[in-house]
Amino acid sequence: MPARAKIKLVVLDLDRVLWDYHDASSIEPPLSRIGDRIVADSRGVKITLRKGVREFLSRTKSSGIFLSTCSWNDRDKALMLLRAFYLDKYFDYIMIEPHPEKQEMMRRILDHFRDKGVEECDVLFVDDREDMLEKVKAEFPCIKCLRFHPRGDVFDFSELIGRVNK
Ligand SMILES: [Mg+2]
Image 1 (cartoon, rainbow, N blue to C red):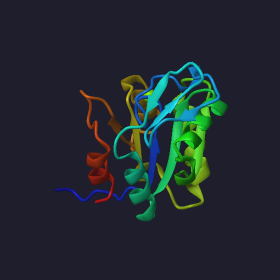
Image 2: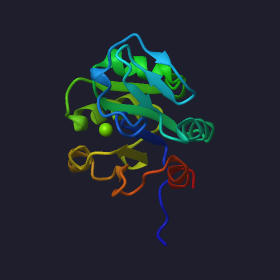
Image 3: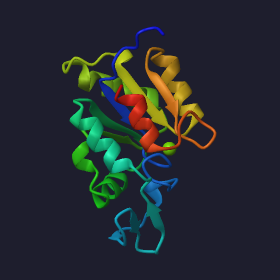
């Protein structure tokens, strides 16, 4: 097997990846925690964190791998959700912008991590949407992309741990 470059940065989409909900921008605050992995908004809409997310983030971070988000959302609302799940502390960088041009967000993420020794080929990007992965791949062909989806490359955070921490 060819040697694989070690991953130094994992970039994660939020909606339908970290949690099951499709659009953090549509939540109506205030939020209330109704379980370890469940948050409800003021209308009673429930958002559930995927199983194994906290362990994934914690183990990845302790392996010395950087973590960033890359999310098309209203920043305040998505951040509110990250905080409600106590996840914001794991991320070295939080990229959330209100447009679907993830290749632009990725460029800024790479700019941010460049002086920490991270290059394009050291990055793993995880998103549920094929079109988002394609946009990033077209601009940054060396970034490793995984589709987090029942019919994608991976749909389980305990499996993703194995893909990252080799
Ligand atoms: Mg998504």
